[in-house]
View (cartoon, rainbow, N blue to C red):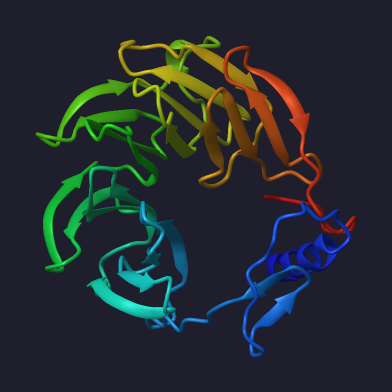
Length: 285
């Protein structure tokens, strides 16, 4: 069903107005969908384990791919070839649900998984240089601050862990609210699992989280406990938050108005962004 929705969305995109920008031409063998075309098809079969995460390198020349058995591969985006097997996977490992390149050293790739493991890899040597375990957690989201000083994780247990990237020790834990004590407020943590975490590209102390509780929390890592502000509405089910200047883009798992633009300063909706989708199947981003 998801593949059919995607194909319908691509076909519907031909009906949208052209932006006026030139599109790089592909070869005669390219598979075309209106203005879009498939440049490469890359076979990445890892014993029938599905792909759970993708991340471009800062230069865009590499694409890291995370699989259901913990395997990680690197694709050369210019040639469309498999560049390296960073980790071959193992039957005891679970899915790699988040990937991130170190913003100051693109040779360091970090993968986080459903087994609560954060693994650091040296891409050139293929060595697993460090593992950090978060017991009884499933990590769904991972990101670095843009200066590389801090990285953060979030997931099933709803706690947000901030790590010092120099020592790889926990710097602070933004605790999820305790339901038994009914410690709930607008600026308390998430009440359901977190699927997205994103640092601001220029305000290094600011980051956002979102998940199943239909809210985006805006945090300042210098504040010990509470979120700075809250956006109500987006139902986040994947790495579906991005930030540019004072605007936030969110993609929700809902049938209509799934793609939305928000004002970071006022936490208010700027606009719903039209997204081509079948009336029968909805958007569900």
